[in-house]
Amino acid sequence: MKESKEKPIGLAARPTRPQEFYDNIKRKYAEERDRRLNYRPNGTAQYTSDFSGALSRYEVDPYAAEAPAREPINDTVEVLFIGGGFSALLTSARLREHGVESIRIVERGADVGGTWYWNRYPGVACDVVAYDYLPLLDELDYVPKDHYARGPEIFAHCQAIARKYNLYELATFQTTVTSTVWDPAEQMWNIATDRGDRMKARFVICANGTLSKPKLAKIKGLETFKGHSFHTSRWDYAYTRPDLSGLEDKVVGIIGTGATAVQAIPGLGAAAKELYVFQRTPSSIDVRDDWPTDPNWARRLPQGWQSRRRTLARMEPQMTDAQKAKQAAMSPEEKIRRQENANIEAMMKIHQRIDAIVKDKATADALKPWYMLMCKRPCFHNDYLPTFNRPNVHLVDTKGKGITEIEEKGPVFEGKQYELDVLIYATGFEVQKTGIYNQIKGENGLELNDKYREGIRTLLGIHSQGYPNLFIMGGYQASFQFNLTDMLQAQGDHIAACIDYARRHGFQSIDVTREAEEWWVQEVIKHRGKTSRNQECTPGYYNFEGEFQRRQDGNYNGGFFQYCSHLSEVQKRMDEHFAFDKK
Ligand code: NDP
Image (cartoon, rainbow, N blue to C red; front, top):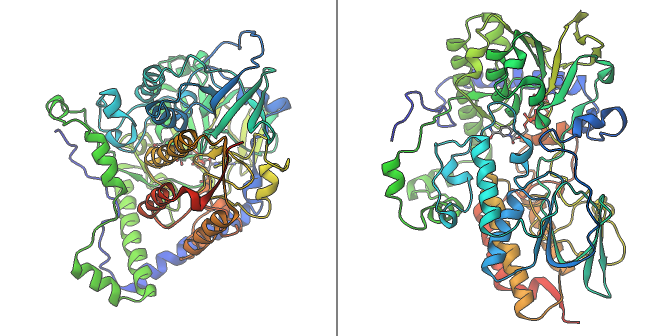
């Protein structure tokens, strides 16, 4: 298998310098974090995802014609998914294996794919190894084309899953669920949509994604900009043209330098007359160790190869006896200190790579991230940094302040007006609002939003008491995995097992008990806040933009292996965790 010469830096770097060096870097990290917190004390409220009124055009689907008129649907299905991305696809595959026939996906987009439907910006790809990220490879007898998959291949894979499991038949696209209300008499969910549908479903699965709702920074004068503008998840190829040749004579601006922008900027830099990159906080850019899949390797893969990889990913990391003894002898403070020093070493290597690639010193310095690796999503790209050597590409480093003002002609920073033809917002997405914004009303008419107001309460991040037959995927109180599909697969397998159990026993409904829910809330609390990492990190969506969070209002930090063990324990002892209704 062909491998690239340069290897990713990762976290393997060894701390070898005097402690004072690391302490100084930590002080610099704290200064940079504080400066950002001071600039934006309003935390998550600095953003909006309410795209009504003048902002509504930022949410229009550019990939499909306006939804054709259709009659409202008033039928009953057994399982209904809100959202048609990987969550729905993975779980449906397992439900089909359990013999569930009546499955409907209700999806806002015009096809399945979720994030891979919406994110079609130039350069879109996934930096989790494709053989792990693309799910159901055994079932579809498919081997990805490259070590890292590009967006179009992943989107096509989603469509292939939907075809294989016959999910298009009942699916309703270009349809948004507006309310989901439990009917205790019928033991059914009533689902209303923006297309006038009134559907019923025995089971509802909130599969509406972890990062699905685009957001914009609330920038003064944003709506006054007279040029063209769009969000990266609604890429306007009619304007840019598919090969970006439409930008040849255009001055382009992009706000944001997160994982999306890092992938889009190389293509923009190559295509645009001029490109201005408005940076608030730089991303860490590691090597992207990519290669085309070796056909001989692919041919030799045994049956069930991916499922074996998934099993390995779920296993507890193994340590030798010597490693265990060394760990045990170390105080918690010493452990944290060593981890932090190793992390700083890795970040310094990221800095050195910038110096080696970016020719202009001021630009190189501005591109250096000053925070612990993993405070923000680490990025991997081989063309991002060299793009800043192009004479037509200009980094506008706002040193943590961000763009706060936009006028008719473009953004203004430190009194300078940047005149643009087109402004692209790479400002990200609302995080993990799954299961919250579809007006879900449970047993006693209580909205899930209202129940969560006093703190999120679930079992495994999936079940919430008082919401029978409702399953939440990719939400809070579940494990966090860099490879999200591993996590979604684990949840999907569990949900399919629960539904199968209810069906086999003739139960109409399954609801988590209060005790089981309370147990999980305490588990989440126990495992959160072991370090002060969240507070020490530069603000971003990983740490709720620096806002205070109740300990239960986040992910389960006990590790993926533990999370999966809990899933299977719960499945083994269903009676202890759930109440059932036979009607
Ligand atoms: P992010 O939320 O990661 O990035 C938003 C960016 O906008 C940040 O750089 C932020 O700066 C910046 N920003 C916000 N407001 C302003 C402002 N007023 N002025 C200047 N800059 C501003 O969104 P992304 O879409 O980049 O990524 C979201 C997630 O999607 C990723 O974290 C990842 O999980 C996933 N993803 C994965 C990819 C992969 O596999 N490679 C590719 C793309 C996305 P600041 O940092 O200071 O807040």
